[in-house]
Image 1 (cartoon, rainbow, N blue to C red):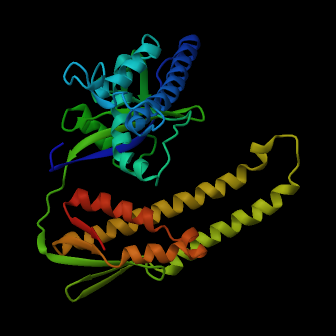
Image 2: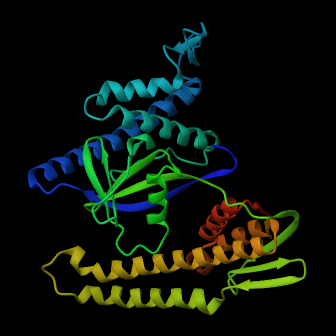
Length: 364
């Protein structure tokens, strides 16, 4: 990917576009089978990659055992009969060929090796345990598999994936999903490796799109200094100008009000009438948990968006988060801050939006 582009991922609800009950059942069965294979295969690949990485550290093996991880055809001392990336692909093919499309197997292997290489230093230092993929993990595939077309009313989009017909469900979409999918349909933007995820019987398309970065007139010598705090989520200084984004009452108090309502329902749930199962009893409790999560996510998106808009308007090419590392260390010892102030989530959203705008972000 070139430096002037960025990958966006959008979550779009889809459903199987088939009215025949037997076929729909067959399609669903196939998707669940693929999901189970992807889950089992992913853990298998990581086990093999981790073993290959650490076989030289198995001190209980004989000294004359060759431990050089290389293709024997290219290096006489290599212990592999193929390239290291191809080893796990061959493992997946041996177990799941014919049960899973080859495109899914190939994308699984590439994605898993990429994730493993990103974490290998943390594994070596003992700072991180090996990833453990769960049964609801997405089914990956390459972007060339998707070819969109408009539906009959030009409201949603249709596509076929491995001979399974799908249709999007955008509803009253107030985001940019419909615009992005329309641009992908006409070929203005590229569809990259994406995936399908099944959550509680609902199917979601996690589509990755390659977009050009927005071009803004920015000056590298103009520096915006931002500080994150509880009193004001973001405080920005640019030259002599000072901006405060959000306040304690708006963010923290509202969040604690949702927590208090959830706590009241939690205490009352012990007296709910039985007979309908645990899920029915805790339905309202789950509702407030989701409500808090959505509220926090919405606020953090708004704050980060306003911060980047201020930087663009002031032509600030560099954004400096002042003293952030020390604040995060302090928050680890404060249970209240650790529970109620989402430092990490806000920084991640700032990073993403700064990258989109072409602003250089520095975390101090």
